[in-house]
Image (spheres, helix red, strand yellow):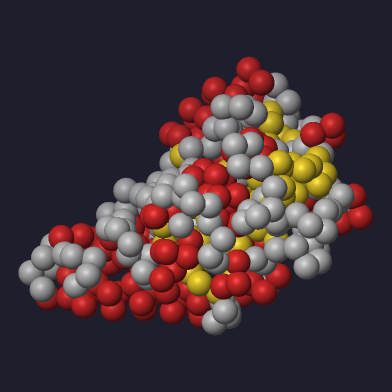
Length: 362
Ligand SMILES: *Cc1c(COP(=O)(O)O)cnc(C)c1O
Protein backbone atom coordinates (compact mmCIF):
# COMPACT_ATOMS: atom_id res chain seq x y z
CA UNK A 1 0.00 0.00 0.00
CA UNK A 2 1.38 3.39 -0.89
CA UNK A 3 -0.64 6.30 0.42
CA UNK A 4 2.15 8.82 -0.06
CA UNK A 5 1.27 11.56 -2.52
CA UNK A 6 3.53 13.68 -4.68
CA UNK A 7 4.55 16.61 -2.49
CA UNK A 8 5.75 19.85 -4.09
CA UNK A 9 5.95 21.81 -0.83
CA UNK A 10 8.54 24.60 -0.71
CA UNK A 11 9.39 23.80 2.89
CA UNK A 12 9.13 21.97 5.15
CA UNK A 13 9.43 19.80 2.08
CA UNK A 14 9.33 16.21 0.88
CA UNK A 15 11.75 13.73 2.43
CA UNK A 16 12.92 10.54 0.70
CA UNK A 17 10.46 7.74 1.46
CA UNK A 18 13.34 5.33 2.07
CA UNK A 19 14.67 7.66 4.78
CA UNK A 20 11.30 7.89 6.52
CA UNK A 21 10.91 4.12 6.36
CA UNK A 22 14.30 3.62 7.98
CA UNK A 23 13.49 6.17 10.68
CA UNK A 24 10.17 4.40 11.25
CA UNK A 25 11.84 1.00 11.50
CA UNK A 26 14.24 2.17 14.20
CA UNK A 27 11.90 4.62 15.90
CA UNK A 28 11.29 2.56 19.05
CA UNK A 29 14.56 0.69 19.18
CA UNK A 30 17.64 2.45 17.85
CA UNK A 31 20.77 0.30 17.44
CA UNK A 32 19.12 -2.44 19.56
CA UNK A 33 19.37 -0.19 22.61
CA UNK A 34 15.70 -0.47 23.55
CA UNK A 35 15.04 3.23 23.12
CA UNK A 36 14.57 5.88 20.47
CA UNK A 37 17.51 7.97 19.28
CA UNK A 38 15.54 11.01 20.45
CA UNK A 39 15.45 9.67 24.00
CA UNK A 40 19.17 9.66 24.75
CA UNK A 41 21.66 12.32 25.77
CA UNK A 42 23.39 14.24 23.05
CA UNK A 43 26.58 13.47 24.97
CA UNK A 44 26.06 9.71 24.81
CA UNK A 45 29.01 8.13 22.95
CA UNK A 46 26.63 6.47 20.46
CA UNK A 47 25.00 9.78 19.65
CA UNK A 48 28.38 11.55 19.42
CA UNK A 49 29.44 8.86 16.93
CA UNK A 50 26.24 9.44 14.95
CA UNK A 51 26.85 13.15 14.55
CA UNK A 52 30.51 12.66 13.68
CA UNK A 53 29.47 10.26 10.92
CA UNK A 54 26.80 12.70 9.72
CA UNK A 55 29.39 15.45 9.45
CA UNK A 56 31.91 13.29 7.63
CA UNK A 57 29.24 12.19 5.13
CA UNK A 58 28.31 15.81 4.52
CA UNK A 59 31.98 16.70 4.06
CA UNK A 60 32.30 13.84 1.57
CA UNK A 61 29.14 14.85 -0.33
CA UNK A 62 30.06 18.53 -0.63
CA UNK A 63 33.85 18.17 -0.69
CA UNK A 64 34.22 20.46 2.34
CA UNK A 65 37.93 21.18 2.94
CA UNK A 66 39.45 20.72 6.40
CA UNK A 67 39.88 24.48 6.93
CA UNK A 68 36.08 24.86 7.10
CA UNK A 69 33.99 24.18 10.19
CA UNK A 70 30.52 22.67 9.87
CA UNK A 71 28.08 23.96 12.48
CA UNK A 72 24.70 22.37 13.20
CA UNK A 73 22.68 25.17 14.77
CA UNK A 74 19.08 26.23 15.45
CA UNK A 75 17.06 29.33 14.59
CA UNK A 76 16.67 28.78 10.86
CA UNK A 77 18.13 30.81 8.02
CA UNK A 78 16.24 33.80 9.41
CA UNK A 79 18.35 33.79 12.59
CA UNK A 80 21.45 33.67 10.37
CA UNK A 81 20.39 36.94 8.74
CA UNK A 82 21.32 38.62 12.05
CA UNK A 83 24.03 36.19 13.14
CA UNK A 84 26.08 36.87 10.02
CA UNK A 85 26.79 40.52 10.90
CA UNK A 86 27.09 39.64 14.60
CA UNK A 87 29.77 37.06 13.85
CA UNK A 88 31.49 38.46 10.78
CA UNK A 89 31.56 42.25 10.99
CA UNK A 90 34.36 42.43 13.55
CA UNK A 91 35.69 45.99 13.58
CA UNK A 92 34.13 46.73 10.18
CA UNK A 93 30.89 48.63 9.85
CA UNK A 94 29.49 47.51 6.52
CA UNK A 95 28.96 44.56 4.21
CA UNK A 96 27.81 44.29 0.58
CA UNK A 97 24.45 42.71 -0.27
CA UNK A 98 22.91 41.67 -3.58
CA UNK A 99 19.14 42.13 -3.71
CA UNK A 100 17.36 39.59 -5.93
CA UNK A 101 14.07 39.10 -4.11
CA UNK A 102 12.27 38.45 -0.88
CA UNK A 103 14.87 36.38 0.96
CA UNK A 104 17.87 38.53 0.09
CA UNK A 105 15.81 41.61 1.03
CA UNK A 106 15.05 40.07 4.43
CA UNK A 107 18.76 39.46 4.96
CA UNK A 108 19.42 43.12 4.12
CA UNK A 109 16.71 44.36 6.53
CA UNK A 110 18.07 42.19 9.35
CA UNK A 111 21.51 43.77 8.97
CA UNK A 112 20.34 47.25 10.05
CA UNK A 113 20.92 47.01 13.82
CA UNK A 114 24.52 45.86 13.31
CA UNK A 115 25.90 47.86 10.42
CA UNK A 116 25.36 49.20 6.95
CA UNK A 117 24.23 46.86 4.18
CA UNK A 118 25.55 48.43 0.96
CA UNK A 119 23.56 47.45 -2.06
CA UNK A 120 25.98 45.73 -4.46
CA UNK A 121 23.17 45.40 -7.01
CA UNK A 122 19.41 45.03 -7.16
CA UNK A 123 17.16 43.69 -9.88
CA UNK A 124 14.03 45.09 -8.22
CA UNK A 125 13.39 47.50 -11.11
CA UNK A 126 13.12 44.55 -13.52
CA UNK A 127 10.63 42.88 -11.19
CA UNK A 128 13.29 40.42 -10.01
CA UNK A 129 13.11 38.50 -13.27
CA UNK A 130 16.88 38.11 -13.58
CA UNK A 131 20.03 38.29 -11.48
CA UNK A 132 22.60 41.06 -11.88
CA UNK A 133 25.68 40.37 -14.01
CA UNK A 134 29.06 40.16 -12.31
CA UNK A 135 29.99 43.43 -14.05
CA UNK A 136 26.99 45.15 -12.42
CA UNK A 137 28.13 44.36 -8.87
CA UNK A 138 29.37 47.43 -6.99
CA UNK A 139 31.82 45.88 -4.57
CA UNK A 140 33.55 47.62 -1.66
CA UNK A 141 37.06 46.33 -1.10
CA UNK A 142 36.74 46.91 2.65
CA UNK A 143 33.34 45.24 3.07
CA UNK A 144 33.22 42.58 5.80
CA UNK A 145 31.61 40.19 3.30
CA UNK A 146 29.42 39.99 0.19
CA UNK A 147 26.02 38.35 0.78
CA UNK A 148 23.77 36.84 -1.87
CA UNK A 149 21.01 34.28 -2.24
CA UNK A 150 21.86 31.76 -5.01
CA UNK A 151 18.24 30.64 -5.24
CA UNK A 152 15.27 32.85 -4.37
CA UNK A 153 12.84 30.17 -3.21
CA UNK A 154 9.70 32.28 -3.52
CA UNK A 155 10.06 33.62 -7.06
CA UNK A 156 12.11 30.71 -8.46
CA UNK A 157 15.06 32.88 -9.50
CA UNK A 158 18.56 31.39 -9.46
CA UNK A 159 22.09 32.65 -10.05
CA UNK A 160 23.78 30.89 -12.96
CA UNK A 161 27.22 31.88 -11.69
CA UNK A 162 29.04 32.31 -8.39
CA UNK A 163 29.87 35.99 -7.82
CA UNK A 164 33.55 36.83 -7.65
CA UNK A 165 34.04 38.90 -4.49
CA UNK A 166 37.83 39.03 -4.71
CA UNK A 167 39.44 38.98 -1.27
CA UNK A 168 36.12 39.78 0.45
CA UNK A 169 34.48 36.62 1.87
CA UNK A 170 31.44 35.47 -0.09
CA UNK A 171 28.39 34.51 2.03
CA UNK A 172 25.57 32.49 0.49
CA UNK A 173 22.06 31.67 1.71
CA UNK A 174 21.80 28.20 0.18
CA UNK A 175 18.61 27.21 2.01
CA UNK A 176 16.90 25.96 -1.15
CA UNK A 177 19.84 24.72 -3.26
CA UNK A 178 22.25 23.07 -0.86
CA UNK A 179 22.99 19.44 -1.81
CA UNK A 180 21.15 19.80 -5.15
CA UNK A 181 24.37 19.97 -7.19
CA UNK A 182 28.12 19.96 -6.62
CA UNK A 183 29.67 23.29 -5.63
CA UNK A 184 33.22 24.46 -4.99
CA UNK A 185 33.11 25.25 -1.27
CA UNK A 186 36.44 27.11 -1.48
CA UNK A 187 34.67 29.93 -3.35
CA UNK A 188 32.72 30.76 -0.18
CA UNK A 189 33.52 32.21 3.23
CA UNK A 190 30.19 31.11 4.72
CA UNK A 191 27.44 28.87 3.37
CA UNK A 192 24.26 28.56 5.42
CA UNK A 193 20.94 26.79 4.99
CA UNK A 194 17.85 25.91 6.96
CA UNK A 195 17.34 22.14 6.89
CA UNK A 196 13.71 21.92 5.89
CA UNK A 197 14.15 22.16 2.11
CA UNK A 198 16.91 19.81 1.08
CA UNK A 199 18.53 18.48 4.25
CA UNK A 200 15.92 17.08 6.62
CA UNK A 201 13.09 18.18 8.88
CA UNK A 202 12.85 21.73 10.21
CA UNK A 203 14.80 22.67 13.31
CA UNK A 204 18.38 22.45 12.12
CA UNK A 205 20.46 25.14 10.43
CA UNK A 206 23.69 24.28 8.69
CA UNK A 207 26.54 26.81 8.72
CA UNK A 208 29.74 25.99 6.84
CA UNK A 209 32.34 28.60 7.74
CA UNK A 210 35.98 29.11 6.81
CA UNK A 211 38.09 28.92 9.94
CA UNK A 212 39.85 32.25 9.53
CA UNK A 213 36.46 34.03 9.76
CA UNK A 214 35.87 32.74 13.29
CA UNK A 215 36.57 34.70 16.45
CA UNK A 216 35.35 38.23 15.75
CA UNK A 217 31.82 37.97 17.14
CA UNK A 218 30.37 41.05 18.84
CA UNK A 219 30.40 40.81 22.63
CA UNK A 220 26.59 40.83 22.70
CA UNK A 221 26.31 37.62 20.62
CA UNK A 222 24.47 34.91 22.60
CA UNK A 223 26.78 31.92 23.13
CA UNK A 224 24.66 29.41 21.16
CA UNK A 225 24.79 31.82 18.21
CA UNK A 226 28.53 32.47 18.43
CA UNK A 227 30.13 30.55 15.55
CA UNK A 228 33.54 30.23 17.23
CA UNK A 229 32.05 28.94 20.48
CA UNK A 230 29.87 26.42 18.68
CA UNK A 231 32.84 25.34 16.54
CA UNK A 232 34.94 24.81 19.67
CA UNK A 233 32.11 22.74 21.18
CA UNK A 234 31.23 20.59 18.15
CA UNK A 235 27.85 22.38 17.89
CA UNK A 236 26.95 21.06 21.34
CA UNK A 237 27.30 24.17 23.46
CA UNK A 238 23.76 23.39 24.52
CA UNK A 239 21.29 20.65 23.58
CA UNK A 240 21.10 20.40 19.79
CA UNK A 241 17.97 19.28 17.85
CA UNK A 242 19.01 15.65 18.17
CA UNK A 243 16.30 13.95 16.12
CA UNK A 244 16.56 16.37 13.19
CA UNK A 245 20.32 15.92 13.18
CA UNK A 246 19.86 12.13 13.12
CA UNK A 247 17.44 12.41 10.22
CA UNK A 248 19.77 14.73 8.31
CA UNK A 249 22.42 12.00 8.68
CA UNK A 250 20.03 9.49 7.10
CA UNK A 251 19.45 11.91 4.21
CA UNK A 252 23.23 12.28 3.71
CA UNK A 253 23.45 8.44 3.56
CA UNK A 254 20.64 8.35 1.03
CA UNK A 255 22.36 10.98 -1.15
CA UNK A 256 25.61 9.00 -1.14
CA UNK A 257 23.64 5.92 -2.21
CA UNK A 258 22.08 7.89 -5.09
CA UNK A 259 25.60 8.57 -6.38
CA UNK A 260 26.32 11.87 -4.63
CA UNK A 261 25.68 15.41 -5.75
CA UNK A 262 26.85 14.89 -9.34
CA UNK A 263 24.15 12.29 -9.81
CA UNK A 264 21.57 14.47 -8.03
CA UNK A 265 22.43 17.43 -10.27
CA UNK A 266 21.69 15.37 -13.39
CA UNK A 267 18.39 14.12 -12.01
CA UNK A 268 17.43 17.61 -10.84
CA UNK A 269 18.29 19.18 -14.20
CA UNK A 270 16.20 16.58 -16.02
CA UNK A 271 13.21 17.20 -13.71
CA UNK A 272 13.41 20.98 -14.20
CA UNK A 273 13.80 20.61 -17.98
CA UNK A 274 10.62 18.52 -18.18
CA UNK A 275 8.59 21.03 -16.25
CA UNK A 276 9.84 24.20 -17.98
CA UNK A 277 9.34 22.54 -21.35
CA UNK A 278 5.72 21.80 -20.47
CA UNK A 279 5.25 25.43 -19.38
CA UNK A 280 6.91 26.85 -22.51
CA UNK A 281 4.89 24.65 -24.85
CA UNK A 282 1.59 25.58 -23.27
CA UNK A 283 -0.78 28.48 -23.91
CA UNK A 284 -2.15 28.46 -20.39
CA UNK A 285 1.00 28.40 -18.23
CA UNK A 286 3.87 30.85 -18.25
CA UNK A 287 7.07 31.65 -16.41
CA UNK A 288 8.61 35.09 -16.92
CA UNK A 289 12.00 34.54 -15.27
CA UNK A 290 14.95 35.10 -17.61
CA UNK A 291 15.69 31.62 -19.01
CA UNK A 292 19.26 31.38 -17.69
CA UNK A 293 18.07 32.32 -14.19
CA UNK A 294 15.25 29.83 -13.89
CA UNK A 295 15.47 27.88 -10.65
CA UNK A 296 15.92 24.11 -10.86
CA UNK A 297 14.48 23.74 -7.36
CA UNK A 298 11.42 26.02 -7.32
CA UNK A 299 9.55 26.19 -10.60
CA UNK A 300 6.99 28.99 -10.57
CA UNK A 301 4.26 29.55 -13.14
CA UNK A 302 1.06 31.50 -13.56
CA UNK A 303 -2.14 30.61 -15.38
CA UNK A 304 -3.26 32.94 -18.17
CA UNK A 305 -6.65 33.10 -16.47
CA UNK A 306 -6.32 33.64 -12.71
CA UNK A 307 -9.89 32.53 -12.11
CA UNK A 308 -8.72 28.99 -12.94
CA UNK A 309 -6.18 28.97 -10.06
CA UNK A 310 -8.49 27.50 -7.44
CA UNK A 311 -9.77 24.80 -9.81
CA UNK A 312 -6.21 23.93 -10.82
CA UNK A 313 -5.13 23.47 -7.21
CA UNK A 314 -8.23 21.55 -6.25
CA UNK A 315 -7.96 19.12 -9.17
CA UNK A 316 -4.20 18.74 -8.68
CA UNK A 317 -4.87 17.66 -5.12
CA UNK A 318 -7.48 15.13 -6.23
CA UNK A 319 -4.76 13.75 -8.51
CA UNK A 320 -2.33 13.36 -5.63
CA UNK A 321 -0.27 16.45 -6.49
CA UNK A 322 0.06 18.47 -3.29
CA UNK A 323 1.22 21.94 -2.25
CA UNK A 324 1.45 23.66 -5.64
CA UNK A 325 0.12 27.01 -4.46
CA UNK A 326 2.61 29.83 -4.94
CA UNK A 327 3.84 31.88 -1.99
CA UNK A 328 1.17 34.23 -0.66
CA UNK A 329 3.28 37.26 -1.59
CA UNK A 330 3.50 36.41 -5.32
CA UNK A 331 0.51 34.19 -6.07
CA UNK A 332 0.40 31.77 -8.98
CA UNK A 333 1.83 28.28 -8.69
CA UNK A 334 5.12 26.89 -7.44
CA UNK A 335 6.37 23.34 -7.79
CA UNK A 336 9.32 22.78 -5.50
CA UNK A 337 11.27 19.84 -6.86
CA UNK A 338 14.02 19.25 -4.33
CA UNK A 339 16.16 16.10 -4.18
CA UNK A 340 13.45 14.01 -2.53
CA UNK A 341 10.87 14.72 -5.25
CA UNK A 342 11.22 11.92 -7.82
CA UNK A 343 11.07 12.40 -11.58
CA UNK A 344 7.81 10.39 -11.50
CA UNK A 345 6.25 13.25 -9.53
CA UNK A 346 7.27 15.76 -12.18
CA UNK A 347 5.98 13.49 -14.96
CA UNK A 348 2.66 13.16 -13.14
CA UNK A 349 2.47 16.93 -12.73
CA UNK A 350 3.22 17.57 -16.41
CA UNK A 351 0.56 15.04 -17.46
CA UNK A 352 -1.95 16.71 -15.16
CA UNK A 353 -1.07 20.20 -16.44
CA UNK A 354 -1.50 19.12 -20.06
CA UNK A 355 -4.80 17.45 -19.29
CA UNK A 356 -6.05 20.45 -17.32
CA UNK A 357 -5.17 22.77 -20.18
CA UNK A 358 -7.00 20.59 -22.71
CA UNK A 359 -10.10 20.51 -20.57
CA UNK A 360 -10.22 24.14 -19.46
CA UNK A 361 -8.31 26.26 -21.93
CA UNK A 362 -7.12 24.97 -25.29
C1 LIG B 1 13.13 29.12 3.56
C2 LIG B 1 14.20 30.13 3.35
C3 LIG B 1 14.62 31.00 4.38
C4 LIG B 1 13.97 31.02 5.75
O1 LIG B 1 14.24 29.88 6.45
P1 LIG B 1 13.75 29.73 7.98
O2 LIG B 1 14.37 28.42 8.35
O3 LIG B 1 12.25 29.70 7.97
O4 LIG B 1 14.30 30.85 8.74
C5 LIG B 1 15.65 31.88 4.11
N1 LIG B 1 16.23 31.93 2.91
C6 LIG B 1 15.86 31.12 1.90
C7 LIG B 1 16.54 31.21 0.57
C8 LIG B 1 14.82 30.20 2.09
O5 LIG B 1 14.45 29.39 1.08
